[in-house]
Length: 67
Image 1: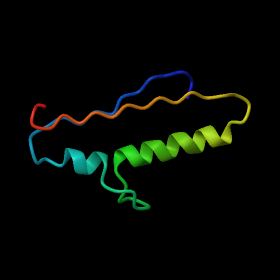
Image 2: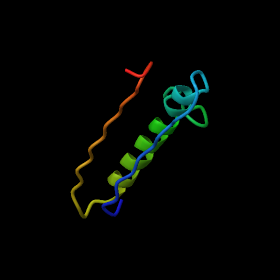
Image 3: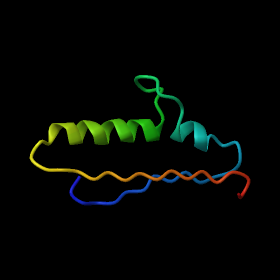
């Protein structure tokens, strides 16, 4: 939140649970994946800061079968 860039990366064998861990669903609580949790945290922090403007850019890339 201080002008920093961040990356969340999941790397591993096929069927090891990477997509499940990253996305999981949008359920409330501990059933949420890393991406929904990060987005929720970032937006809640932005909502609480009213003294500055924000530009938020997000990219998501999933490589499937090396394509």
